Amino acid sequence: MNAPEPHSASTRTIEDSLQDSTSTNGTSFGQWMALIAALLGWMFDGAEMGVFSMVGRAAIQDLLGISQPSPESEQKVGLYFSLVIAVFLVGAATGGVLFGWLGDRIGRVRAMSLSVLTYALFTGLCGFAQTPIQLGILRFIAALGMGGEWSLGVALVMEVWPNRSRALMAGLIGAAANAGYLLVGIIGIGLAAVLTQCESLLASTGLPESTVSMLVANKGWRLMMMLGTLPAGLTFFFRLFVPESTKWEREHDRGSTSNWVASDLIGVLVGAIGPGLIVWVWADERINTTWRLAGTFMGLVIATLGYIYPVVRFLQRTYANSSDAANQTSQTIRRMLLGACLSGIALIGTWGSTQWAMSWAGQLTQNVKPVDATGTPAADERAMAATAAKPSWIHETITRNPREYTQIVTAVGAIIGTILAAMLGDWVGRRIAYCALCFVSMASVLWFYQFHSQFDAEFLFAAFLLGTFTASFYGWLPLYLPELYTTNVRATGQGFSFNFGRILAAIGTLQIGSLLAFVNRYETFAGLKGGYPVACSVVCFVYVIGMILIWVAPETKGKALPE
Image (tube, rainbow, N blue to C red; front, top):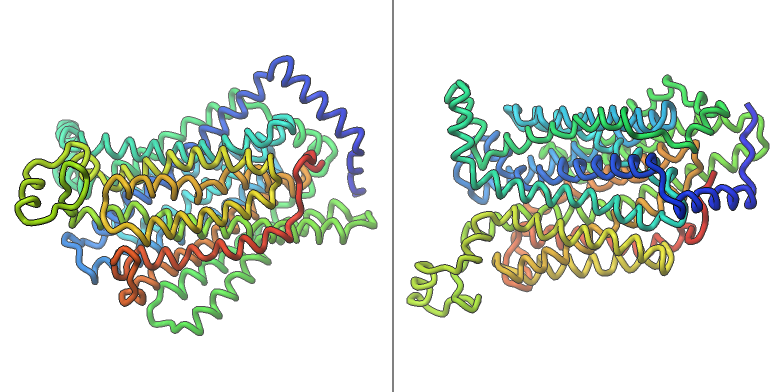
């Protein structure tokens, strides 16, 4: 089949003018429906990710039967917690390629419907898990859909809305996902307040007492997971009201979408073995560091070759009779790998530092230092006794739900940060913006973990800045990644780039469990020894790599989406 002729500059100008006139004279109903559907999908994506950050520690304790935390049990909980997160990230990486392929083959909207249904149903089923292994398997399957929804939604919105709206759309994409985090925090506080009433209500339905006790145990984490089924209703909205991307429909009419062949997905299945190997070598304590490093390298090679295989085969078919076939293929693959590295740095920073903030807040409040009316530590035992007898209502409220309030403030910061990051990328250029985001993210992580030793108002402010800067990349990435690929490979290409970054993040996350065992002798500037503060501070130096790597990436500011 002959390669489709690239659109000339004049043709793109005409198309952009038509899109801009549509936007000027009144944005179409279809554009708004596509945006609303995608924003809702991303919001529930964020909620699905945020729910485990908040209740995961309680869930692991419950499933392991740990009632009284200790340094030894905390290390075990931390290991399982990091493993479940790593499995989730691997599932998202696999789902990004799998559903991205499906979106390029059958259309963005139909594939989005399937991806949302997948993550909604299996997130709800997590509430019935009886062991950490069962929970990990269910989280893996849920992550398949979640990873796919991100890439499909970005492709749809960027193709439906005009080029001059891309920065705003990218900011809204990141903000919507973090609104999901915020929603989970609010629901968590509400659920904690009415958990007793929930127990009575469930008992009144005739459920066995043992089942009711199981559902409400450990702050009702099972109920929180079950609420994850709510997005399933979005699938009907997609099918009824959301139009397909006209850019994809043009590719379909040209016949290029038929070059995606189902048999190529064997590469994705083989590729999934790679991250599975990585998780295994880091989970098994009997494996030494040398073999772990070797297994990690082999896992990355297997995952890379497997996940890019469908794209290579598609490009070979599409450009079979073109003299430019080799150049088109090599450029696409280079950009996929570059995008994966840029995404991976952002994701390692988030999953290796920010995602542990809620667990750390819970730990700090187990031994809360009393404060006086001005918010300063009590000076002596008499002041401590007086403070303990009459704590301020603000202090009492936030320390009752430390994880939830930490998640809320980080989510609010993230919503602001994602919108500002996308606008910054449009203002100063993609490369300068990314470099700046890496610098301020590293600074915010170090200030949060190194200079705070108790849960108070300053801790929450630091968490707000942590969320603002480390999550800002999720406004930058939806702006930049679609600009790297042509329409016929956009969903698969950016699905690979963003979600393969999750495999790199899984490797970084697994290091937290390992680092916790080795950092006990090191101390933060605030005087805390070992634990999450030291381990997360080490991981955040990955941003230095990002500040260097971005300068080999192409600058796409002011350019139209490639056709």
